Structures are given as structure tokens and as C-alpha cells.
Image (cartoon, rainbow over all chains, first blue to last red):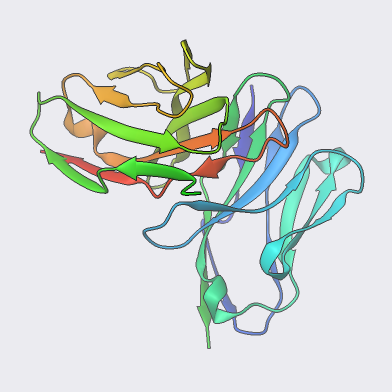
Length: 113
Length: 112
């Protein structure tokens, strides 16, 4: 069965520190992988996506993610966190055909000054 | 270009009432979807459509109906609201490629 696991429910980091949010997926075929960010009371905004090719993908707001097929992971990273990065982050996997999309349960990020 | 719009932003219903959540997109996207977001559950797919006149069920379809008479609109109907349907509802759309989903701002629904 397809699924996405975000093992960290909540993470707190200091402003300027590095960040890594974990995402593991279970999918029967080559997945399309996404990271979305949701600010309080807002909809979801796409940070980055992986379809194929280079396994290190760059996104908006200085985020990057690395696809590791052997580990079924797609972890999100940022070298230096800003206070405005405080939000909820969702990893998602999608099917190549059809419209099946599976989201993780999210990781809430708190940034302390 | 407004993207994906949803109305209303907030709604309170009594158990047993019916209502329709509206969703519209102006990007000429073929695919549209409805999700519900609950604490600790992430987003779960309710129904989706791959074009006008074509809809299908997602992960949690019970208690909801959809139709797609035009490319732009994809309303979600609650026939008889239940407290378990208290949630935040998001509509999303995408084209076949490059596959990115665009989300609306959400509707926060409370059923008492």
C-alpha cells in the first residue's frame, strides 16, 4: 500500500541553524515526490518536487531535498533557518497516472530567536 | 489569474443540514480534487475529477458528493452533515503536466 511517513511531528530549531525534515515513502512504482509548506490559516504552497533526473532538487525559499531510492526517502533541508520558515511541512507522493496523491501527517516547525 | 478559489472561508452547520462547498479554478486544469485536513492526519483525498463529467472516489468519500459539469468548477456537497465532518477542506487543481497541484485557501467547517 502507498503511504508517506513523516516521523517527526514537531521540530524546534534556532534561527540560523540548519534544518532537516524527514520523509519516507512506500510506493510500488517510481514516485513523484513533493514537499509543501502551510503557514497558519493558509493553503498549501509547493516548495519543490522530484520527478526524475538529478536526485538533489532545489526549491523556493532556499530549500532543497534529496531523493534516495535505496532508503525510500525524500528529506527536506535548509542550511540556515529564518523565523519566517515556521510553518507546517508536508511530504507527498503522487502516481504517474490517475490522481492518487498521498500526504504525510506533517511536521510542525518552530523557530526560536 | 485568481488560481483556485474556495467559498465560503468559514461555515458552521447543525447536524443533518446540507451544504455545498464551492471550488473554482481559472487555469483550465483538467484535474481537480477535494481534500480534508484533520489534526495528526495530514490531507486525505475525498473525491477527484480528471475532466468535466468524470469523477471518482478518493480515500474518504463517504458522506460527500461531487459533480463536474464544467472545467472550472468542482463543488463538494455534504448531504447530511455530521460532527465527524468537522474539518478544513481544501480544493486543488492541476494539469496533466507538470503535475504540480495548486491549492485553494481552504474552508473551515464546523458541524455541531
